[in-house]
Image 1 (spheres, rainbow, N blue to C red):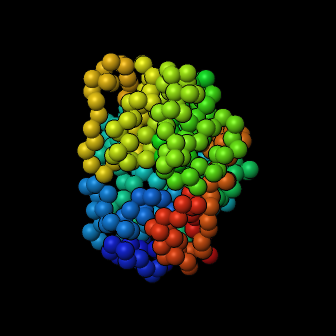
Image 2 (spheres, one colour):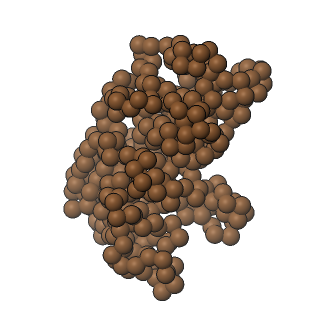
Image 3 (cartoon, helix red, strand yellow):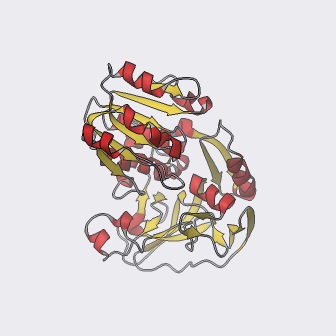
Length: 344
C-alpha cells in the first residue's frame, strides 16, 4: 500500500510499504480522506527528531486525519460502515495508571501516529480503535474533521486554565496551535484575546474579530497593549504557544496577580523564569501535552458554529503531491496556517 514515508532527514518518498491492516474486534478500518500537515511532522522531516523522539528507520508521516469507515470489528456497536469520522491519533494502554486516572495522554506507553517508531496515517487506509474514532456531524466537512486534532490542543489549554466568563487572555504565537488556542479561549468565555506574533501575516485571520486584539510584536510592545487593555492589571490567563525561548524573558509581565500561565508551545531547551516574580504574583502554572477527552467537545463546538476553523485551512495538495506539501510547509511561508493533503 502506498504511503508518504520519511526515509531520512529531508528525504521523503511516496512508495509502497507494508502496514498492519487486520481489523480486531474493537477496531475500525478507515479510508483516509484528508490529512493535515502538522508542525511536528515538518520538524521530523527537517530535523529527524523532536527531543528524545528520533527517526531511526523509515516512518509514515501524518496524524491529523479524517475519513470514512469501510469495515468494523465484531464488537463495535457505535460506528458503522459509511460513517464519516476523525481519529484521535494517540492510543494508550487501556489499563495503565494514567488511563485509569483519566489522563491517558500521559501514558508513557501511548502509541501516537507519526511519533517514532509508530507509523502515521498518510496512506489510503488505516486500522484504528473504535474508542478513538469519532463520527463527524453532518455539517462538519472532512477538512474540518482533520483540523480537530490541533483544535483539541487549544481546548486542552483552555480547560487546564480553568477559564471564567469575561477573562482576558493573551496568546503568544499565532501559528496553527496559537490560532486554535485563541479560538478555544473565546469559546471558553474570554471577553478579549490579545494575540501576538512577530509575523504580521499570521494575525490577518483575526483582523475582523471584534473580540481579538492582534499585536505584531516586531512593531508594537505587547506589554503596553496588555496594560492598555487591562488598565494596567494584566491578563487573567497567558498562553505561551510559540515555543520561543526568548518569550520567557518577559512572559510573567503580561499576567495579573493570581493569574494563570499555560505552557503550550515547546521550547528547544531550558528557559529562564523569575521564581520570585512568580511567587510575588502567586501565579498558577499549567502545562499541556496533547489532550484527553477533548475530541467530542471540539466536534460539538465546530458543529454548533461557536468555532469556525475553515478560514485557517490555507492550502490543499493531492496525495500524489504530498512531498510538495511538505516542501511547502517546511519553507515556512507566513501566509500558510494549515496545509492539508487530500487522498487522490
